[in-house]
Image (cartoon, rainbow over all chains, first blue to last red; front, side):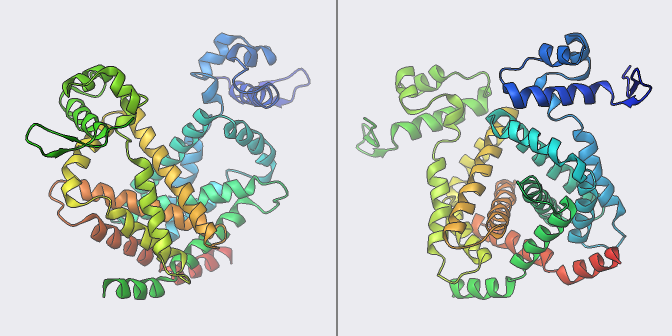
Length: 210
Length: 210
């Protein structure tokens, strides 16, 4: 049975066990290094046992990817929220707005620490890439379920995932103060402006073919 | 010393050692299974030693990714071939044409066998994803070197990589007879058409903001 929240001695609600383990893990990864930290040390740093740790997480790596289903669900909720008749790009824009709300500004410091840990470890980067690749696949499924054909569904889903990735990286930059939603909107508009030069591109292709 | 080509008993030129090992590996992977095939067996099947195998490849996995530098270089040659003043999407279109010429129709059967092996093994799929992620990074660097700003450079590079991935998957489908270049052109146009609906998308956003 998963305990979601507990009362501390002052009677305040505290985060649940997985959240406490996640916070403790991040602190240890950031200060001692990811490689140098064991699951047992993470558990002990918040007064829990190794057994409790492994009841929540398969390994220390998974602590960094806790909450992925909720993250993907935020995108899917945005797909559902787009009105019927919305274009694929409008659906993706709705998914991006919904996903961005999953990362309020209060979470920026936490996300920065997490990213710094991931950036230092190629296996974690690989896992993060895998997470975004799965997201793109899931988004493409959701677009097809809304009668978007191929390759439009995959193109729109991949574009949405790319926009999210670029916006998220920017959101984490030192000194960046705009919300993730605002940055994602800007990056999506950059993509539309970029590909909006298609008349020129077609002319160039015509020349190349001639 | 790498022997590039050899003469067989009939006096014909034969492919070099890495190509022979690659061909032998593909045949064994496809018939026996990737997991069940060792580097020694690959080498022995073409009358070579394990030592020769490891002079060319770090492990059996790398046999499947042999030639990646040449593949990436084909994209970069296409970037260089785009005229000055080309838009980011025109540069990407040029890169796609150049990369497609790396996969002539004679290579389709070989590429299908390779893909079937990769599709059956999650670690190989991960390596393939990594290869495309590196390609996108390299392409973005090349675009920035041509004075394309961020995030346009990354967006264009990621879009090009996505288009290539979708086109390549289609090229390998049973019954598909169009060239990779033609498919890539079609997929790129689908992307431009999709994002060309931006007027509608902007109107929808205006509604949402209101």
